[in-house]
Length: 238
Ligand code: MN3
Image 1: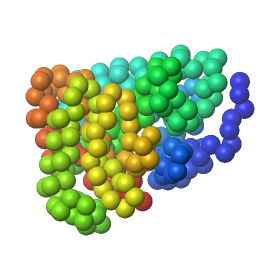
Image 2: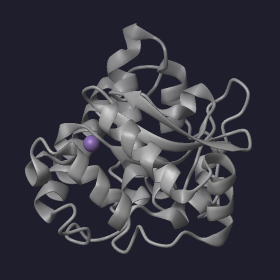
Image 3: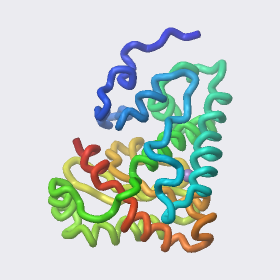
């Protein structure tokens, strides 16, 4: 058993602390007591959902949540633990594993599972049962400065989610002082590009197929209008 790294920021980060990506290093975000509880543990554990499985119904049903959280997210956790047992990555915090394997095709399986754990934990927090609606004033101001209007931001966010070909993610990120929309394929995430994630929408088919079948646009629109957690975005700006 490797000695726990006492300098691991995830063991000491405060409940709303953020680890910010900076030059060359992955930066990290721990929010709401969800990540820091789970990520400090070895082996890696499935972080608890921030709300009950039926809380997002009917936009995202409990049936979808049961598979998405209980099978897919759990699957990435189980896979990662299996993949790293007996390797140099055993005992490392999740973000360190992601940083160490990003851009290395020979480590693709480890990267994909580690990144998908992170992406899903971030996605659950990007949603909230009474989401959408009015933005906190401080966030609204930043969005208007970067996109012109909240509607323009939502339109671009939705367009990125719709135009991501195949599996992936749409993100609201902060790049320096500017907010931007980006999309990533498969397990890729903005952290590895030095961008600070503020919100994400999962557009893998498993995120919406049980509820919307092929109608990705309906899922994305409903998420943006009814679930997106603007408060979480503001917290992430710091
Ligand atoms: Mn997913």
